[in-house]
Length: 178
Image 1 (tube, rainbow, N blue to C red):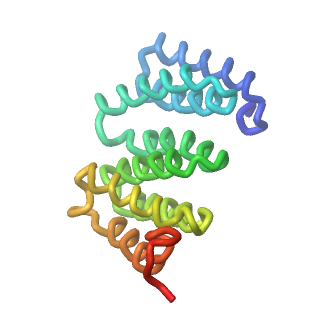
Image 2: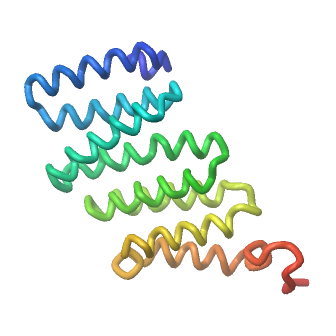
């Protein structure tokens, strides 16, 4: 309730207590879920190191427990990505969006498609002059994860964006265009 009302200090106290309880009863699923909620509250307070520690612990649990935690990990990538996007840190935001989308390839095709749509909507909502560079970074991130061959849609969408905005991709004074 405190997080929903953006009372972040109160939310941190609540989630820390909930994490302690989950540890005490050894409920790893609940612990991972609460760590992601704690991470979100900490990020909102600007306590990035603590948020990162909570995130790392949640990731460790999720990776040990298997793919059923992919939705949780997607959410964990969305939180810092959303905050970076709101702050105009496009590169950081897109990196988190790519990672979120990558998690969904392990979960379910419909969730992957939703994550891909969210990523592309965010990309196309950027200032127009930033779109080509960020589209290229998304492609590179996707390819670096080895996902372009098995999941080519995102790579292809970014290629189409780059083809539609060729003059912006070249930058000012680099020729081409009328």
